[in-house]
Length: 232
Ligand SMILES: *Cc1c(COP(=O)(O)O)cnc(C)c1O
Image 1 (tube, helix red, strand yellow):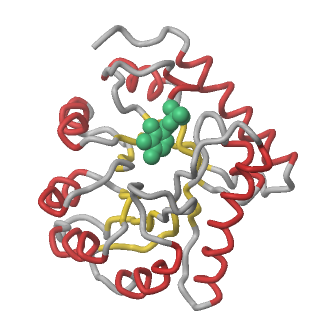
Image 2 (cartoon, rainbow, N blue to C red):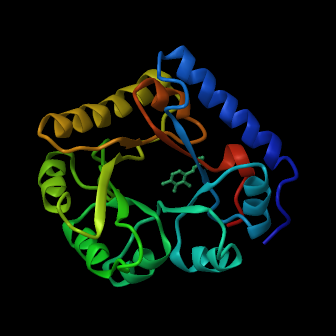
């Protein structure tokens, strides 16, 4: 992979400023939005640069690639979030090496993570991924299935249900972006009304994080705006 982008510390600072200013603009509680730095397809040195600039939460999409990076930072205080799709035959690796999985769209995956979570570790934090724009061939459970999925996962001993996640259909129109994020927020509020105790709405990326914050995001997942273009 290529050398890391030399501007990572500056970019990181700008993204954090963008988040803090969106919190003010949209009347959100100060510091209520956390930044997940998405380091997929970026070299280890890029993670190191962001880490040295104070970033602790990193998102990865691919287990194999993540394993190599995680071994480099073996005893660090980095918090690892899996944000790529997880197949049921790969759950053990995720259960042992991640703190969060944002992409649970079937009860079976959560069940396996719970069973395979090592006893020495706290329950793994999960978000249920919702196919909020109801696109065909897109990951995430359909909106109507979120409630049964929450019911099936909330009491598993090895997982902690923290909230919902979505990747809406991309749009450059802020009104359209907000409409999608508002749908996820409404589902989240419905679940809270049903008694599910959750604290996380994982939504918003480099191009739509402001709209996501306007609609209640508390984790934005940002790659390109911090690290620059990815190596593919
Ligand atoms: C790659 C990725 C991101 C980051 O996207 P950027 O546009 O680079 O900010 C966020 N969330 C998920 C699930 C991703 O796969």
